[in-house]
Image (cartoon, rainbow, N blue to C red; front, side, top):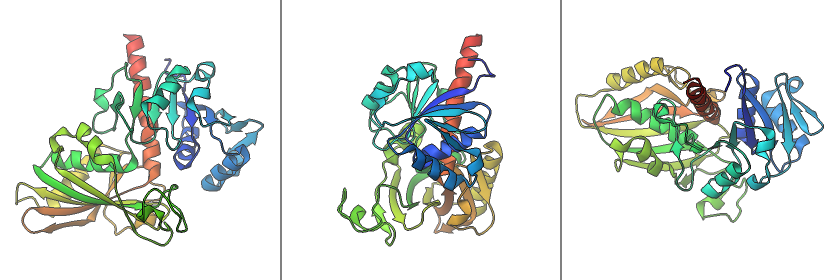
Length: 340
């Protein structure tokens, strides 16, 4: 792949993450969204994009194309991977951010349609070639990888936190709660859903939930396999999430300043991915922050001899940015292999 040639991306699903990926790509020179597949009305999808971006003049709907100053994206009214002619569109990557498309079968449909690689916006339901988290295992990628995931916003934030701290300290176990903004699959009014608690109104309740990230975390951080317990609270805010993490350290000498200083150093070595905030922020202050983890030094406290509690913020924009990062990693790898 010529370095001057943008990475051609086919996007399936134009929900929140899909629109964030589109906006970020439109601000960069190395990406081109060539097609967007979504069953939503194109005019409504364009309206939602503009309402979030606050810049109607940058995004225009011209017939079947969504247009910005950098590229034109053909709008395709489908949510079925098998219907997409990715070979004719000459994509380098398909990013599937549609809800429910997390199995190998859906990913294989994209590959059969001519996509060289498929990247899920979330965690897979079964085995795939690789979960890639920049800052942890980006060096392990291989040109033969075809089915990929960049994890999820929560899994990435947690994996980065534990990777950084376990590189400096011996961690015996971890117990955490992710305090998560409500999601689009939750009802705003009480409505019979997939389980009892998730049938209650997301707009007026704190709802205990589960998270599927821990099994996949062991693939990223095998040294912590069996040492991490995770729960989730969905709360009535629209954006901005928080990791409330309790870590039990083997060494009782580890203190608040030790943990905060390690995170400060890590933020310098992982610019754009991890950052540290020293101010007393709240969830709305995180909106628009493209880091995967914003570590809150004021939230670090010690309880007893071995337990330290930390707070880390994140929002979906950081995950959208990491999805682009993963595609860029593979484009760079292909370029190096072609040059060899």
